[in-house]
Image 1: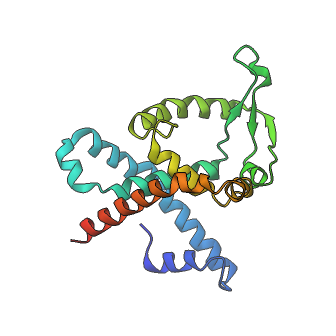
Image 2: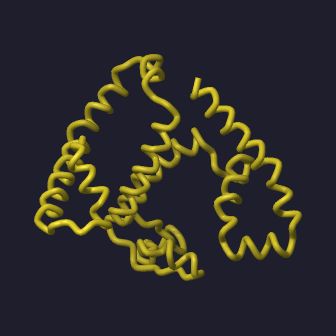
Image 3: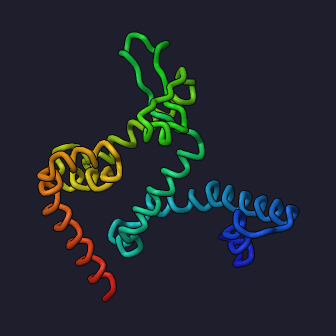
Length: 196
């Protein structure tokens, strides 16, 4: 999508002293190419998904493609300011709130910043719900999935509250240790298979 020069300039955008006109021009080209990919090329991907037989799709897709695209979607949602909605109940929609985009930093400090939910927040939540329900069927991350439990614990280990629990009760870490080791071995096995 990007030329080698455009990629080099974009990668060095925040670190190198670059002429402001070159930076602005490169940014504009990158935005146009990204918009074109989202508008045109993505439609071709959906066409292939609808029309190609599943066995042919399986030859093209790798698990890493799935993870990369899900990460891409997450970054796009952050860029657009998607926010979770919280509310007392269904009967008081006028009281529904949405967490502000900077909630991730605030949550690390134990703060939750809420604003009234906008129409965009509500529609985004509605549309995401059906997608998330489908994803949930494919990758249940609830407490009934031991892999999800172990991974959530691993990701939360840097949280000061979790570190305190581990320090006060080392058995908590032992509870997850075997599962984390098993998952790590599974990852190593997959990487070895893919390298052959």
